[in-house]
Length: 125
Image (cartoon, helix red, strand yellow):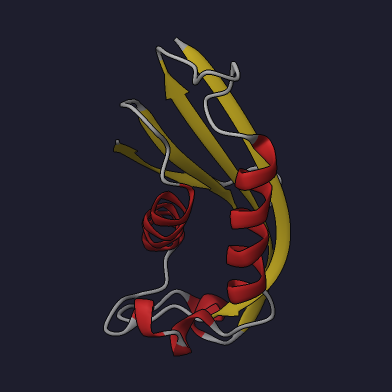
């Protein structure tokens, strides 16, 4: 099984809803690190899972979209607590649609909100 990973970082804001989480209920920022990981058994004719340049371009689009935004105000988060778990799923689906890896394998996003805490979401393709 081959694995390819690319990451980028950005700052976005949110506030948690639906419970009493103290200061987390107030708007605040996180310095997120988004790590994209692809796993598959076969490479394309060039020896790639997916060209890293394509992955970097799609991550840059996602970072541009989420960066400096209030996650609560984005349509993807309508009716949702903008938890790290929801954010990792939303980012995974957005990036998988843009990257469109060939063949079959596993695609995941690991989203760090600080040096010690992360959530991940994985989809088969």
